[in-house]
Image (cartoon, rainbow, N blue to C red; front, side, top):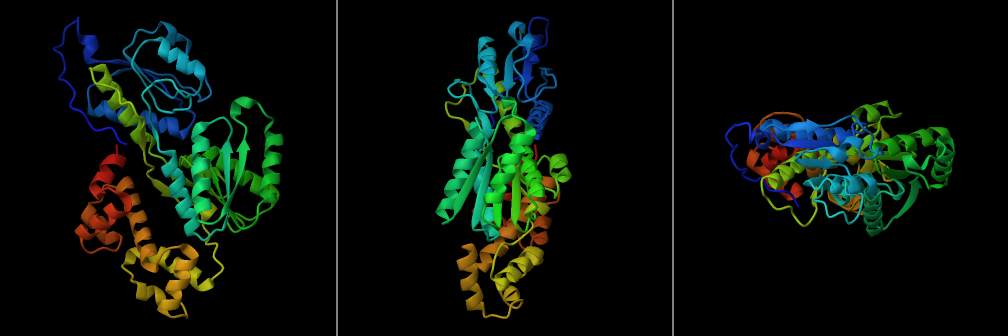
Length: 402
């Protein structure tokens, strides 16, 4: 569910008595220590730049921090918060001000919620890892976090539906004050116990980095024996990991943008939605930690490699068949048995993946992108893109470029 843009009331005329109404005073209780929080802040900033200005109260903080002391006596207009615990929930509700939560970790607060879609994140990760041919899977979560549990539960369900088993491991939360070395030792033992090759989804990038560290201590090869994927696409963290960490990028920036839009609507008399607003992820950013195809059939591996290298060059199914010493019917059958989709479907999937990346990261015209990903006609890209994503290329770019 997405929050539809609303027409806001015009600015009141400037005067000493109503100047404060034209510049809402908003507190942002959002951490700066994680990529997710920083992206939410960027989304809020984008909204404010595009609309009326705010007076913003914010200070650097960690996700595990309690509510700031000044909040108890603060006389503002509204709050956007990452409600991490009951103490923060009680503190923001005690202000009696409009509040929008962007985390949803504390149940039954009654606060409007704008959050990433954890089920969609798990689905995107599962499709990517299943598409690489893995038959053994793991999920590394963090205890006490409902977003981690939801990602893990949905990932497990999707893997089970595909006929495989997902092994799960829970790391302690940072607030548990568990000795890092002891916890890491237990993670090492878990990785040693897994059947290989195995693909592991970590609930976020910091846990993904810990899984990679444990793999190094175990002596297993990444990605050949253990492929690892994180969530959040925290680029410095992903790049400093060894090897660099593949990651799902949730659209936290859009979360911030829509949370700001919702709060301003409430401030000017709008009604808060009764149901949470969940936003789909932006995509997957592949890096070395998953750069492997875990398929025993060497002809299928060769075909998949060729498609991933040249899908955007306008190749056809016949071009793929020419790369392997088997007939089209045999390759089609083995492809379907191994990956659960056709050769044509794999070509389309790779083209759309590239189109999504270009739409998010560049201002290249859509007509040019169509040709860059192997389609001669913009209209055909639009039809295929909407079939794959439920959005047109233009809608996708507008949603993910705030």
